[in-house]
Image (cartoon, rainbow, N blue to C red; front, side):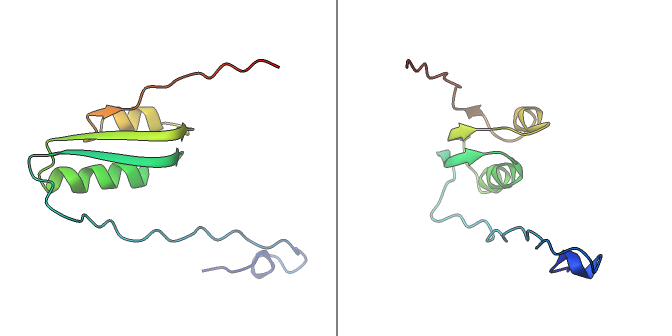
Length: 99
């Protein structure tokens, strides 16, 4: 793994951003025949949500709901969610502010 841009080109002094590693998905308890709800603060790249939903479905979850405070949903994320094991997602709400 390249740890700095200088390894690619010596004249560059910009540090590389290294993505954080995500821990493996762990299911605590028996979800068989139950509704599973996944809650997070931000959904941008949906890969981890899809993996969690698939794991819950494999373990026997009856339905899977996903909710997030901020659903950024990059690129093809909405399509991936629609085609996944997720049964329902939290509805988008626009918040009106007055100044």
